[in-house]
Image (cartoon, rainbow, N blue to C red; front, top):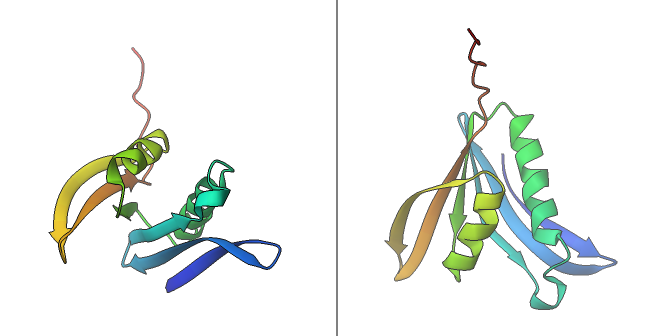
Length: 111
């Protein structure tokens, strides 16, 4: 699996993302929503769709690569349960990698 997905309003493309699966690790990257459509939960719906797709493909973990205005996006993904794991430079662009573990942790027994 390695595909580009788009969000449509009518026939207008208002959002996009890339989703791939490498073994049991999912990757979401290049999530983007048109400026005039931000604040309408389109980005959230795209990421939710990708998480559902990857979960049903037996992914154990999801990595998200964040480009551009990274600080605002880090906050967005933290609210969704992602944790920042590293910052890298690629082609003079800062990229933040965030992760979300999809494996269920066993409930601790109470005494």
